[in-house]
Length: 95
Image (cartoon, rainbow, N blue to C red; front, side, top):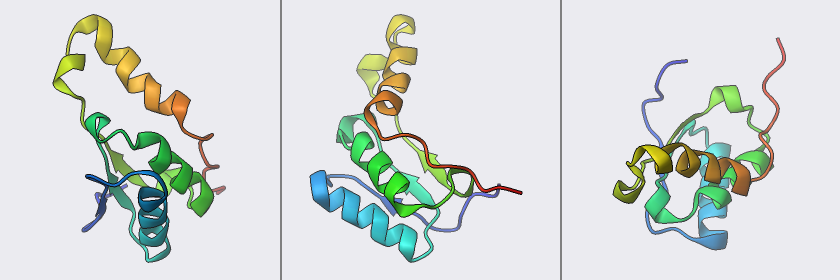
C-alpha cells in the first residue's frame, strides 16, 4: 500500500463530530486517517471506519503515542487499548 496523498485529521474532534467527519471523508475517497492517544477519540474513529464498510487494507491509519506511555511497561498496553475500545475490525477485501 502506498501512503495516500491526503488524509483527514481528527484533532479536537469528539463524539458524533469525529464519527461524521471520518465517515464523510471516507465517502469522499480519503484513505488516510490521523489520530492520537491524547485526542481521546480513537474509539470513535474505529466506529466510523467500521460503519463505512471500507476494507481495512485500503486504509492508512496513524496515531501518536502520548509521552506518558513511553515507558516499556506502558507502551504495548497503550497501543492495545484503542483496539479493545473500538468496534470490531471491518473485513478486508477479498481477492
